[in-house]
Image: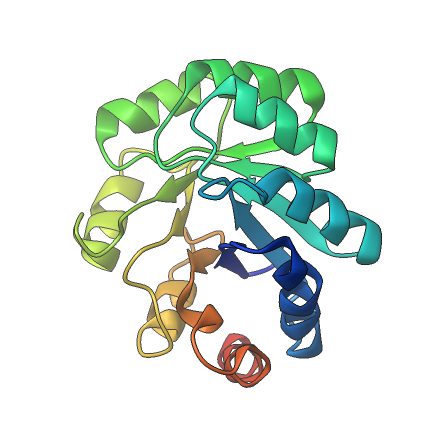
Length: 190
């Protein structure tokens, strides 16, 4: 898994391939295409066909119907803003990684009960950022986090330096020149 997971919103299907190409050209080989738009499944499908070596998944997956569309389109992982037991069970049946949003001890315990060891921590800044991650990691040593929301170029290195951070997610690299942003991220990750 890449250390950075771009959160990609494709509003027009014609933007899918150029957007994914820009990420690749910048050195980022991963994309979480969100189900916030009508063309999400189609964008995943086109992306997987055009860039078979890229780690393309689906984000903002809030129910099994979306999870099925994503997996049928070729998504290699699923991400949710919260924890859905139904999506977790479906993902496990399909052999697809599922990263649910979990910010409380109760949600993390539910994820553990479902066999999940990597959770999305969203929105990271509103829920205490790195300080909260460090506090939550003490009682849950088996859990790794993907902080998303409030992560950007100014604090990326700090988040990635914490051993319990599996990867960071965000749309910060999608603003402005994607290739240039990704190159800056690659420098930080190194």
